Amino acid sequence: MESDDGSFGGEETHSIVSICDAYHDLDRQRADAERRMMQLPEHDEAREEAWHEVEALITQLTDVVSQLTAVPSTTPAELRAKATVLRQLLKPAVADPTTIDSGSLALALAVSTEICNVL
Image (cartoon, rainbow, N blue to C red):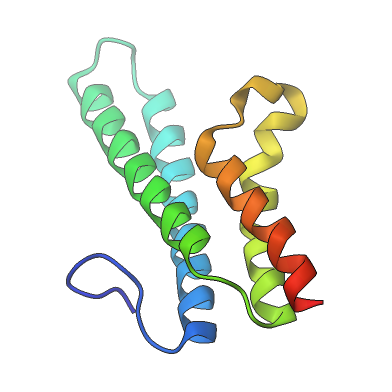
């Protein structure tokens, strides 16, 4: 569950799973908001509102990725959950490697380091 400060607390295993679940939920919301935005006429005021919603969701996603990077995986299940988020983050980079941002790189480094520690 999300706490008052926006972080996802609790037991570490639960925390990583909760953070990953939050990422997937926010990413679905972002994709839905982008679809709604693209269906609106270019100069429609509702399109601008939808864009602000997308921006807010992207900011939340960035925060969730930072939280996920900060919590070390200690089990294969936690590592697998993090890797699933990383895979989602890197999908756009298949077509355009310049789309990889610093948050994705930080998570990739964390996952690769944790592989050595967990496995």
